[in-house]
Length: 188
Image 1: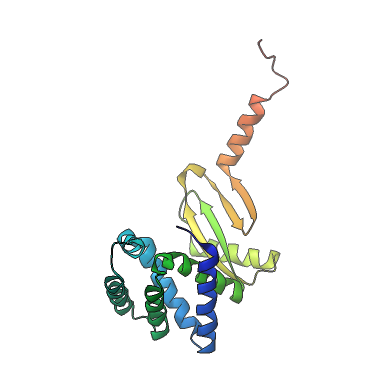
Image 2: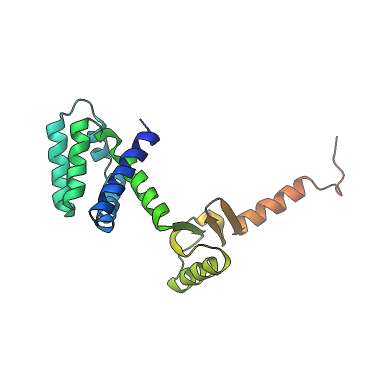
């Protein structure tokens, strides 16, 4: 059950509180850890969203995760507050909203590079420096994805802009040109 407005409000409250306590970076690292836990453990999310499991058990599980991740007291208190208020089912969305709001506040832009094979660090650095020089983006987080179906080349996503320099795109373009070729007599 998604509720972006609620997630945004709780995330904003946590950001404001962590800024007030000078613990923004610490809480951000905690949220990155919790994001990995949420993405890597479906049972954890199912437990949080389950109306059958009592709040005490959910609090105990959150405390165990907090201990394992060595989370800050502010993050632990926030998790307990969510359980107390009955909002723990929105925890994954709140984590996502917090990370997005943090990146917006710090002006960190995510650039996605999709290639047919693994990319070396030198190429990654070259792409980041090229994007920085061509745009107003100064803080860039490069996310790499490998998709073999591209055959070669790359896809580069910068916010709402997509640069498709893949061989798959070129082949599809050639295919559509052959399909609509006016120079070939079409049989009726």
